[in-house]
Image (cartoon, one colour):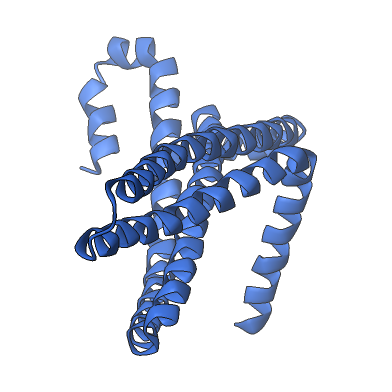
Length: 233
């Protein structure tokens, strides 16, 4: 089990290193936008809390206007940084995976004839394009949503611990429990996701093969037979 996990980690590391290293400059921009957006997102509630506290304590109108303006600017800046991070993340993901598509296509073209007899062109297209598109979505969504939310959660927990250690400790335990549950769920979902991708590849292979032979199917009146094969009748 441990050896398999180590092998998978090594494979992931090599994959990321090979296809993300040329995107180093864009990855640096992505990290800058992501961290800046998280900092602004953490600061916005603090500004709002300060506004409420000053309003209740009878602060001057000028002070409240400054705090309200700062909160408005922070909100607009946060959305702008999110847009920039999303754009850069998508650019990195698609640039890296386009190179991966080229390598996979070349690899398929260099395989021997028996391999292509076992695997239909539709299946290979789904593997090369469909699976790699899923990888591209993973790259972009993982950085923006998963990693960004983890960093945001850590920032929130730090702020809560500064204000009240008890609340911070309780929410830290809750967050750790949720993280463990998420890992357990992921371990269960991966098996079904692999089965789904394999079924999708077989489906596209079936469609491509039978559409190419559509004239023969119609000539022999085998349309319903082909449909039954697809449905597993």
